[in-house]
Image (tube, rainbow, N blue to C red; front, side, top):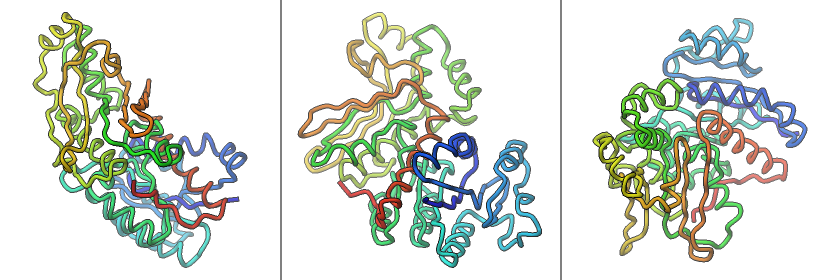
Length: 370
């Protein structure tokens, strides 16, 4: 049996759905993957911090966070509070890794789901590096560390002989990175194009049906897919971060979201969208990257596509990436539905990958630099 202690840094909608999925799949995880887990710590920006090496009450944690209350009461007096309720995520990681090292077993996994910072990828990158240097494995749905510091982090993971996994950073739960890593040996990814942001794709296809930009965006906000401030989506920053992540991991790039040519959909009018439809075309926010004269060129921009183009056919929350490869030609990875549950699943899948490696006696797990 593989026993894992989990430390959650970030406990928003994705983090809470992840804990629900863990509980829903607990019997299956134990039966099929010999995986037993407990959540020993949670760090949040708004609700404080809780830590108990014996495990936390996740039902109560979700109730408190959902009500906007402090998580401090999760740590009972009988457990002995050893870290302040207002401690930062970085402080909790350092505390938990030290405690885990002292206990030796079980192994610690830091699950990082804080909000994307498109300026520097912080504090998520610091969280990941501190966890690896402290001897913990890391899974994340935050694009920042992969988009800003992938090579540095992968190197640190190799030195620490720990896993750094990030399937949930692009296309929610669709297996993009693991597909290439595990099933395409010897294949080089030369470039890609795709639709990577569900909110903008939903808005554009809703406009094709006659709904307004504002109404479609409001639908996404009400569904909890887009934030109240949806600028990261509609201004193309989310897609740019995902473009940088794919380029860095699969194409040996070293680019940040700031290095991606970027135009969002904020200024797209219904007239432009409907005019394209009348001509048998579709407007889509397309992300792409390729090597041009030894320079990795990434771009996110609204593009008119012929309606026969596979990307033009994507509607609503559908995403797709088409990889250009040297040996197999183009390979398409299509996700017909994406959202909160799928992102939470990606975290679960990465956790299972770690457990499977440990059960085989693997001590190192940094994915290879391609």
